[in-house]
Length: 304
Image (tube, rainbow, N blue to C red; front, top):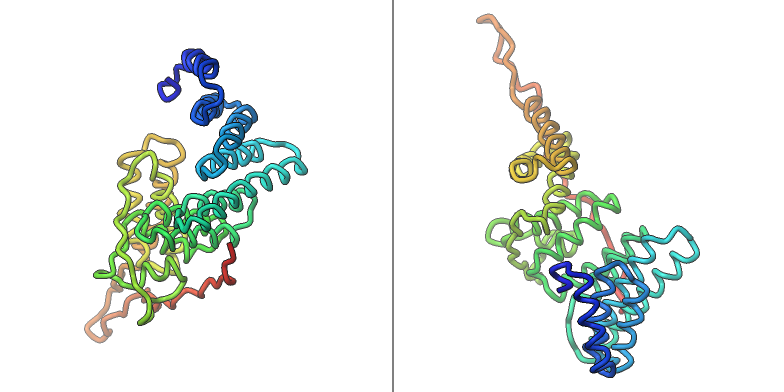
């Protein structure tokens, strides 16, 4: 009923469940979900914590508690309270990491939760570290690359964002270019000891549209210095425009990016100059410079 947005009916049924089984973990878990879905984040936290009091080793409950604290932090207008709420969110995510570590469970979920929290705080280096750890646990998961790419973009590390978002949107296949995946995971080309991983790109959908928009816009923004970026930019932005052109934000991103690349490609086309028989054939007015590898984005040693 909650998933169908039948809020009042869901509330009635969960209250009946509480009367019949208030000592059951799952009753409090579901009640927390009902409250979270209706925007009662404090109430949801209380119910998730009641569920944890019954079973304290369920990591997904810590994720739920932390997510609600993070939402409260994002909505807070008090700097002091915001800091405290983010800290509480991280405490719960770290608890999930600790339980998974003891159980030797390589679950990327709490690391992505930590990454999102740091990203909201503007701590993009710490966010990227945790997103990279999530990818280390699940290196073929395209959505994780998408989230890493958004973190890089927000932190203005655009070259690294391109590699991560390419894996998310178009995929990265070692048979085509073995270095794209290594650049996304390590910010460097593959070495003999690295194992490059094939990642299948995500189809354009309401869950991935922002990855497409970010990838295309970053490529277009850098294309004046790297005209070759327009190849993928035009492909991605055209698809975005076709499917979401009526959306004010996505349509504008696609339109602007395509306009940038149209200008870049126009300037890169040779414009012949009229010449007499005594005048040599002119050379192109624009010669693309050789692309130099991006400066590696180095990270300190990760510690859980």
